[in-house]
Image (cartoon, rainbow, N blue to C red; front, side, top):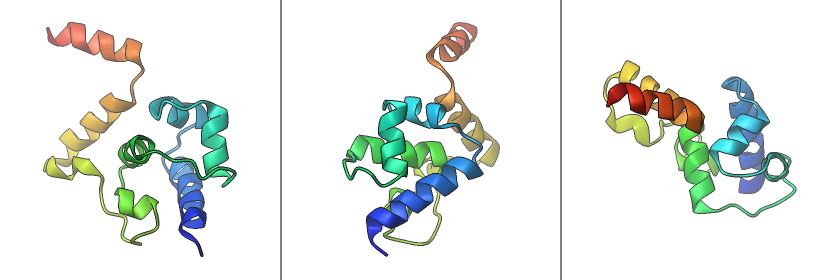
Length: 109
């Protein structure tokens, strides 16, 4: 199996496993829904480092796992946060809309 096939398979699985819509993942990655679906369906091999990093964050897996370089579902860059509740909170904040983030910013000022 080629790495692009592994990526396609993992993108579909991880999005469904996390209960995310195509719209949510595509917005987080700054892609249109059509661009993301092309990735998920293997119709394009255009993938920037930025998009790979964002996919790693939203799905909480390593870039190596996404790209098929390992089969170990290591955590993303959140692994430096030792407390699982804090890591989950940080990840959830990243997934909020800009409007929701603004509400939190005002609350913490």
